[in-house]
Length: 144
Image (cartoon, rainbow, N blue to C red; front, side, top):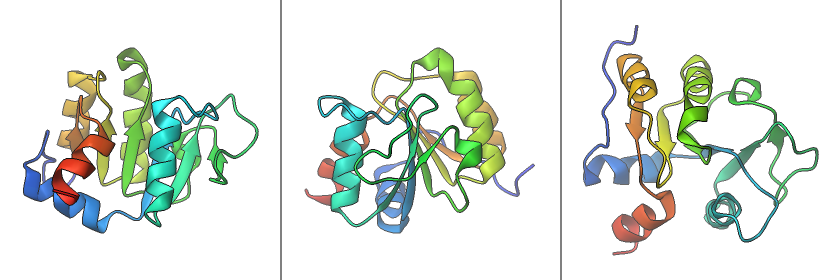
């Protein structure tokens, strides 16, 4: 068990800290399709000089030049943020892998929530953001 409990949907000042300190982001469910949100956010993060690590077990080619992994457990540490673009019911194993990998933050995109998985991450000391768009939050907090 971690020395501290994580925070669920932390306040704006903490999210600003997350954005300011994150360097390596695992994008779970990354897609090569340009019209998909995961593709757009990966492109956005890369454009800010951040390292994007694609996680998608069905892809064989990197997306936007980002290295590709079958699961979060295959991503070499450290991982600052695990950004999840999967249906809510697919979240628990991703969260388990993120905890095992020592990820600092688990971010479930808009429309994605899994309270039981979030509780597990919080108990492990991992901050969790649910049902929020990373891009929209960045624009609101970092460009405002």
